[in-house]
Image 1: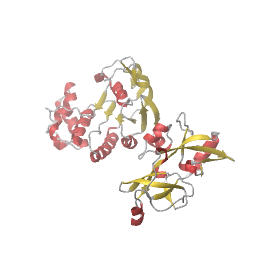
Image 2: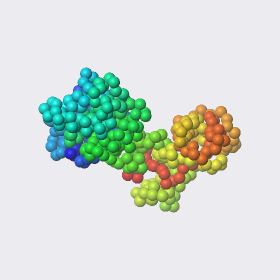
Image 3: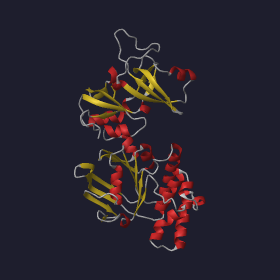
Image 4: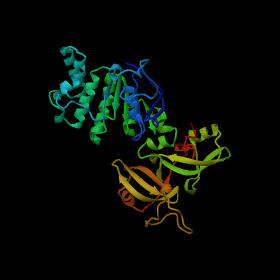
Length: 391
């Protein structure tokens, strides 16, 4: 097994396009690290530099304490699983898995032992004599993983291995990769654009944007305390609601005023603002959809329902705050909503358990809903730097 260390790693194309900027990361032995971010953020390029499939423009990559910048991929003692499986179509599953072992001129009896052990772990023993074209996408991906497993390399690299699978298979394969990791107990570096994969698989997540590292941390750290606005909106589904508002400091307490509603910042968040000596001023307020609740008429923030997404165990309610007109009642019967200001749009997650049939029926387009959220669940970002004020 091995650690991996990247120091000031940079990738420049055509002497002008910088795909990865000064990438610094220490990956510990047997750690499962996931690179995650939108398309074009540099995550796959970074993985390919570790593998030796992309030349490193600047910086160093070390595997088990050895600088590997100038080593060929075959000499780095890594195994890689690709997005497109990269199986030999004319070979059987057995021969695909055994291919790298035969290149090493390993004895056939030992090859048989390794291939059959890998097939048993991955549940593909019955497919060993089939060709890849006779397999489903999930089965082909297991074969690709098996081919990497038998090499018993120091580092296991996976580049979006589940992106070609349907939703049901992705869920199944995520669980199988978790079990595989427990059985192999090796160092994993995994690339994905799916934050659900990152959250469920990783010991640590590396969140990237435009070739830069936005945050490195455990899934819980990145979810509970995002370093900046990008991470806050990227991690979590649906994404965090962001509201432009004012932070007020009055008599040692803090308040925010979203949509002309004054809410006290309580709990650890309020204490941390005080400890850091944050003063009054404009702020970007973040509240996750699951932390917003419905309340009674006349309380909280009055909104109008625009979209109701039925997700099974919960509803995703897209609401917006409608500006009040002079003399207008706070609530009334459902009516045709006024033009929507995007800045006033929010998403609310409501568990379906406990909702009556009448309550669900009343959640239709144009219906009035009152929402609220507690001060202890708030996140605060600087409007200029977009950094978390509590970090």
